[in-house]
Image (cartoon, rainbow, N blue to C red; front, side, top):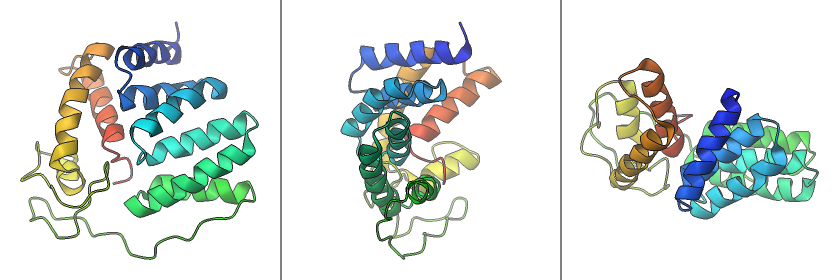
Length: 205
């Protein structure tokens, strides 16, 4: 069994074991897309967006999957909505990718907000009134301090609210159990961190 086939199997098990697991559905759709199975990617990505309509990357991947399966109008509709969501949340990487997709497809690009992105906080610095969670998009609720040392801990403090961080703690346990991760190994820790970044929507932060 290849690595991608193994990942598809693991994420399928994760999604089936917990239908409310947005990360399981999102990761399954992403894995299907990476495996060249665009048709299979559509349903789990739609389910991920049903569970969390703020998942900017899911709009990007779903639009790509729909376009590859010949559903151009639906792809344009999905990506257009994704551009708006990504713009509102300041998700620059998926925003740029989806704008490029619309341009390539000859589709109109929705009006974007002109407000500049908030400046990152200095390490250990105080919260600002402009704090907005990268995952839920809501203002306020910032963690009292970084959850752990290092650059990633600071990114979480700067961009993730206390409520979403608590959600990740439970989700992270599922990721460890479902994927059999050993966090004492570099591979296990790297895999865990990657899914944490995806769940908290920190990829472009």
